Image (cartoon, rainbow, N blue to C red):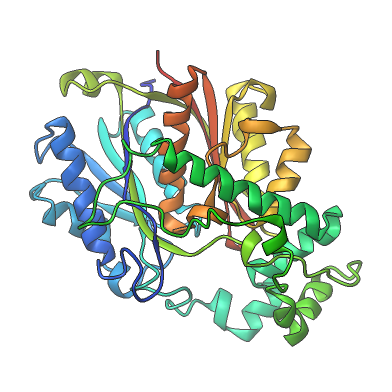
Length: 396
């Protein structure tokens, strides 16, 4: 079986998904095309070198519809022979693009693949695909499709996390993100789009005192019927404590990110140096109401498939689907200190849905190289109780 290697990981900055945001004037197609052009230029890849382009996108309609992967490949000048595919596992889509590329490589179905994701909420707002999961009352009722913030508050309630613990996590991720940017840790990953090359959502002045004054973000959602929907699916749940705020919830941003995945022979043929080996992967599903703990189970499954234990992992890069899920992950897997999101996470720098998985891959590989460590893990939870994870091993 061919081994799958990660040869490169690049991304755009993360722009606030609102008018005036750093990437709001750039379409998702422009973001993705710019990254394909950059990765080709960095490594001298000809238009026919890449066998496929796999792009995760959570909302595949409008500006993100029509198989944006294939369209971007054409616009990047990759000719008529490079196919493309978009895939959707909600917020885990970018990780699944990477995992699918690794599976194709391992099965000798392709030699060199670009895999990643793109999400421009400025151009394609959340729920603009009008999916039954979010808009059909019968489907919402039968699946228990609550807002993710309600699920986060449910986790905090069930696991016993209080507001000060969540606030402390929110302050930590802001501090670490600001320190990472100041130290230049993302400089090699971020491709300038126009004059933009930053994660502009970071709030470095965040303090425990400032976040303590913030109101609960999802209390009104709960009062408007979401709490009752939870209890219809989980009758044992009493009062749900609404404890998440804007400081402990992921910021929504626009971004794109891609990786270059392939086998050893393809890498040698194109003069590529492998940065990491894709050791194992997992996609799982859990309770669709609680939903935000699936990434944790995906990590455990992927580690078991790799014959590894959480203690073997130097760096966990996990999408911060609200503070409560992060605290649960750290507690249950006994991941403390700078092993967990050491350079901040999506609460501070932003969550670009389909792009987040590939952004985490870039973070992980860079951090392994800085530390000289061996194993890292990336993971994302998504809507409806989905979660995906990937185990990476640094190539020496």
